[in-house]
Amino acid sequence: MDDSPVWSPSGSHIAFWSNGVLHTMLANGSNALALIPSDVVSSYSRPVWSPVWSPDGLSLAFTVLEEETKILYTVGADGSNLTKLGETTSPPAWSPDGQRIVFGAGQTRVGTDYLDNLDRLYTIDPDGSDLREIFSFPEESIGWAISVAWSPDGSEILFGNYVVGVDTLRLTELPTRAYGTFSLSPDGSRVAWLHNFIVPSLITGTEVIELLETMNLDGTDRRLLVKYNRGDFVAAHGRFSE
Image (cartoon, rainbow, N blue to C red; front, side):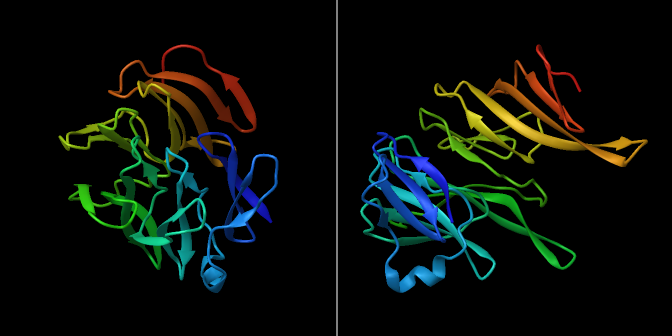
């Protein structure tokens, strides 16, 4: 039951979940260390996302499900300083300098179910202090932010299909759907986005179309790379078209 391996920034260690407990080990598989104290292991039996290393490799942020609520924690890479940061509805992301962590919050009730709905964005120090609200939407149903990322220069945060300035709080909406995962290029100039949408079908009633595309952070130069439909992958070179 070992899963979700993540390399440390230096490549010397790997963090991973083992039977619901966060571990690290050397890259050769030796020196496995449980980072969560044994007396609270039972509280961390349901990890949510892969752990996230701090840029200096000295700490990790991780999320667990406690009584149907996602809770964000930090812990030292040596197992010290386990700290509860609060409830979250998105994976965390460290600032490039490692001084702050960003995460989303918010829920929407649909019938008898509560769905994660990122309508507030926060940053916080890794020790749980200095919580700041970066942005709050006045309306609901903004979208499920599966990914949150900090720009390499630390000036902007990408979440859902929005970019917000950390200091300016200026919000930019990108021309794509919020329901997907993304990854920033190393220089932060472009984003790769995997998302899907439902279209009518004469055969099945509906079909799910999945797209992999890239674009600049200001929403320009949008390019569709791969389209997935009914089991077939189709390379789609060139600019984006619906």
